[in-house]
Length: 213
Image (cartoon, rainbow, N blue to C red):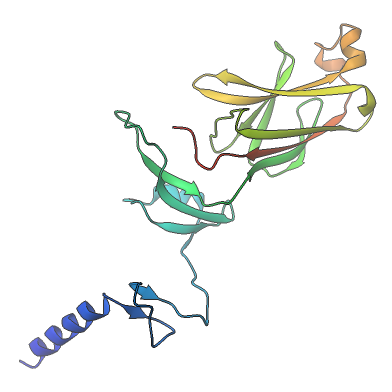
């Protein structure tokens, strides 16, 4: 019989605490539901990208630390227009200003020598350009993203570089025109076998504060 009053007492206490709770402080701020004081930091849940994506149900307002990308992620609305069959919210990185998406060192045969490990490079032998793809799909829009290319290695003084975008399937992919001028003039650039093994460095930034709908 004593258990029933105790349960009611605990429920009443929890109900009162839910209005204004202090952890690490005896005087929680009146305008907050939870005040963690000023002595120690808050440690968020730490999930890989796979764990984060598999989390169900997810709702707007959730925050985690992504151990794959090493950055904070929040589940937030990213689309204003409602499109039938398409979600309006998803996990997005919480960042301030330009966000680096990928970086690397690639040689003239599309071999990746070093980098962030989250991209692939394919040399398009038809159009003579490199196509840069991210492991995690991310469309490339040249008007809102920054792709910096620097040629290095043997013969870097007679190389030229240009960037662009191309629609591949249903997505937009960054393209890199990395041209050895002397080989192009000789009309032999199209042959993979004779392209000199020089390199280029690249860094890809996202300048958008939110993804395009």
